Image: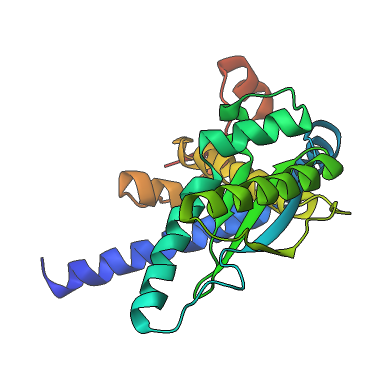
Length: 245
C-alpha cells in the first residue's frame, strides 16, 4: 500500500466521522427526547416500585479492659482474633440466637444476606451493619447481633464481655435505591439506545440519494442530474426525486 492509499483511507475515515456527527445532529431532538423519557421512566420506577432499604450499624470493641495487649506478638494475635470474630458474627449460633431473641420470622440464611460484619483497618473494633426495609428493625437487629456476638466472644476467648462502642440507631433516610443515580442511568440508557438506533438505521440504508452516494458506493462520477416527474415516479414506484447519470 503506497502513501496515496494511506491518504485516501485517512480521508475516508474523516468523512465517516463527519457523517456520524451530522447524522446525530440531524436527529438530536429525537435522541434528546428518548433520553428524557429514559430518565423519567427510571425515576418513576425507582420511586413507585423499588423498596427503600435502610442501613444501621453498631460497633463493639473486641477486647475488654482486662485484656493485655502490649507486645508485638500480642498485637499480631489481636489482629488474628479480630478476623476470627468477624466470622463468629455471621455464624449460625449467633444469628439463630438473634432470631430467637427478637422473635424474627426469618431463617438463618435470609438473615445472613442482610448482615455484614467487618473490621475497620488497623482497629480492634467490629462493625455490624444491617440492611432492611424497616429502619427500626434494622437498628434492632444490629444492636442484638452486637450483644449476642459480645457474649460469644467472651465465651470463646474466656474473658470479660467486650464493650459496646456505638449502638445502632434507626436511619432517617434510605441508603438505596438512589433516585438520582437511577435517573442519570436512565438518561444515559435512553441517549445511547436512541443514538444507536439512529446510526443503525442510517448505515443500513444503502439506497443512493445524491451525487455523493454515487461516488461513495459505486466509485463513479455523475455527469448531470435532472428532476424526475413526480407522477411518473409514483407510477413506476420510484422514490428518489432525481435520477443520476
